Length: 466
Image (spheres, one colour):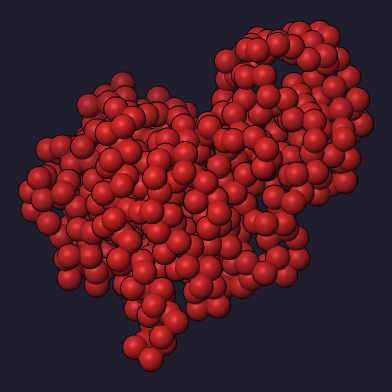
């Protein structure tokens, strides 16, 4: 079969949230042509494989691509997110990305989307259904928008053995349950484990029927502090100022976590168990109350195997049976810990440049590509914020973001871009403060005063860890 030859300015591998956010800014800020390649049948990446009750963990207003609103501009009126900004469902996010592609990208005439295609490397890809092969001449850059390797339960292979007579499923299949099991065993302490437990409770399962295998307790974030609207100014900006002060005034790493919890930056499920994990998962206070209803939490390390009548863990075993339903939530959403320069010659590798915000990061990286010259200059603005895993990863994670934030703040063009970009709500919130708002101004003064002190303390703690 002969190969098909294509030409473009940018070849973007992966049409998930990162690839879409990058495309959107390049399309707006340059005259470039773009080819997107993805193995799914429509854009959205892992959202195509997500469990049916998944929602965003942070407000919809700051997710998606810069030029198209995702949020309904409403607060949730019911449920455990009541009173906070709406959280788009997985179906809504998937439909949103499909709409962005069909109504905005493709009609521009500058974007091609090759779905159901496997990228073979070296600017070559193959249509999975037809076998048709393509090679691409790229005039500017290739973008690896798959580098962060997002995984979801439905595509995850557990790293433990499972007896064939055991009921075992990803949480995707929970809505299909038609027979009451002897009990539920939720395996995993991250975002999906939290979502599985909350869904079971919301659907009426007794908290006493749930066993939650939690290899590590996690520090969690309070969703109320992520609301970048005037109504929540003192929650959002107050928490940021408080968290910088907590770091700046801490006398040790242990003391820092204590102070971060005391100021409301961090939450934990069990106040008697000190967390050793931090993935940036976000919960509301009402969700936290529900999670605390589950008392049968198993803290014996990771699962080694699920056998006919027992589950073997790192540090012991617990009984089970074929009548129990075992729910796999063990996949880590973004699992790679490798870091590489974002700009390397003709390759761009999007990673996080702002804490907790991969889509904003992709949009900012695209703007940096469009607006600045050398790789050195671009990488200076786009220091990688490393993905956190262990609790102490919070230190280098936060230090890296503060360094980026400082550089952005010193650059008028970037300050203007941040203010005008939909994915950055906090710049507008800060800019809304008038001199006569003495209470708000005092909070901003506190934030600015503690930022350099916090950065210094974080670098001190990093040296201690190293």
